[in-house]
Image 1 (cartoon, rainbow, N blue to C red):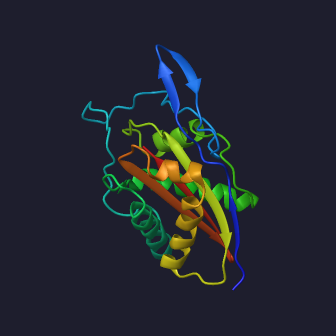
Image 2 (cartoon, rainbow, N blue to C red; image 1 turned 180 degrees about the vertical axis):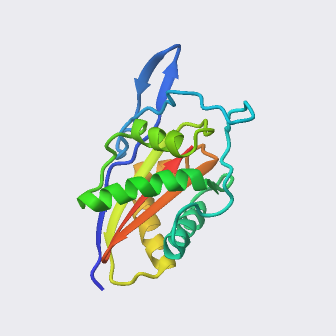
Length: 193
């Protein structure tokens, strides 16, 4: 079985103090700093902004895609010493759209993070009112499409990269995971909030 792994540098945190921003990354890590701000406070029809995800099952994904995404969340949570991340299906939909875009170009990147992901979120879920604070992306090639094996390969790649691992173990509550596949090439995106 031939396997090729590619990862883009992980995005870390942006610290905002009194309107000034300070991009930070840890020395020796592959983390690149980025900010995440939601440009509009979306309000639900009842007048209340949704600060927590609402979907409780996979949103607009086929059975295989949803199985890989759920397995990535489960596998990622084995790396956390704090409380487990809860899968946000709204954020998973956003992550999947980014994985689809990367699959179309055959390249992985953090292009447009976080603004482009926020735009997709608010467009698809107008009541959503949370910011994406970190992102992991990766690509692999495998002739074995088993959902659990693909998930484990992605998480193992992220685990072996300090910046990506820092995101998985970060102070987040929710994670969105999106997977896309073209032939034997698989793309995955994790979004944290």
